[in-house]
Image (cartoon, rainbow, N blue to C red; front, side, top):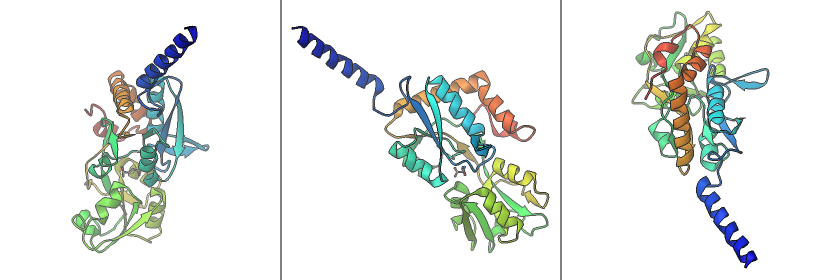
Length: 262
Ligand code: GLN
């Protein structure tokens, strides 16, 4: 009888635990690690300093993990590996200045928006390229697999363009500086960082797109998605998100590109 009772209790306990966790994936109980997939080539969102990945997304990821009572780990990978890592469970969240695009929504769910951004054009000063139409017939550098890559590669947007895909935005900028390409199309804030220390290049005034950054979560992990959205809402509400953004976007356009989204 005692044995039977013990067995019963084990079954009940196991069932309760299984229900509570929802799945074996991390993200819903206290003693696990939140793994953030990112590509640390995207300042000020994620980049390396002293061999450590730092930046806006790294801090947001850590703050969310803290709120969920979880440990935190960053996995640095190629940008186009992040979504596969999230869908396969190698990473719990994709946090990489990632645009919540319709294409990506087929494979992953996205959290609420945390920043508004857009693609911009970087050229050498004195270039004859003045806007998107000026890209026609030119060679344009992009970061492989990004929304900038997709935009320039779509003939509906730019005609007769030669797209050169680089694994890192910084490499595209280097190619521009050495006249191997005519322009770079990349997200506005990394563009600022890349141009900051280069007096011979500049960003054209009109952005090409309007995009929203959000956190990617596996489609079967609604529980984690809800938890992430709740944490994000708290970070917005408390002003913590703004202070993270302001820390990295100091004295530029932070005020207009961020905050109060949804
Ligand atoms: N926002 C762009 C995208 O989602 C670029 C992101 C990145 O290079 N980290 O494609």
